[in-house]
Length: 160
Image 1 (tube, rainbow, N blue to C red):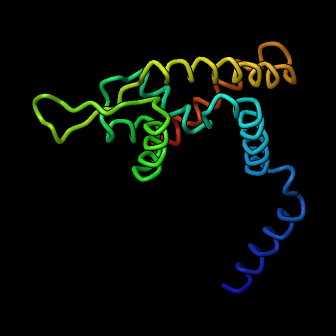
Image 2 (image 1 turned 90 degrees about the horizontal axis):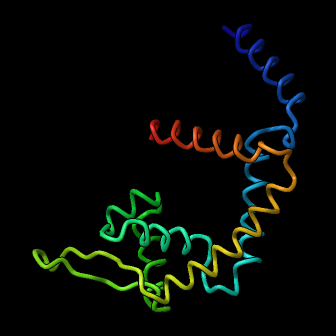
């Protein structure tokens, strides 16, 4: 038993020495997400939207009849974070609350004209960041990257 544990520990130690943090997928994803998110924040801050507020507002625009629970599923934000983001968008006048006629307790979020304008301004700036990202890749790689990131998301969605 001890021999087997010692052998396993030895193998793990060798792998640990070979695998530097900089060479791990986890580290590469973490660094890329951090740096790309920063680029979006810098380029879009004057639009009045953060990347997460953009995610929510875009989903409200695309799915105008979604209630809070449906938006939680669609955005994969937890309910409390979504509520904070929604209240900020409400304060800015980018969305409004609409109550169902049949059931006044059930509410949906709807985008306003100001919200539409904020989305346009954000997306113009976001395209500049995307162009910057694409500029470091050979032609066609951006499509492949998007394909594989989407595939990874679908794989892990199935696991949760």
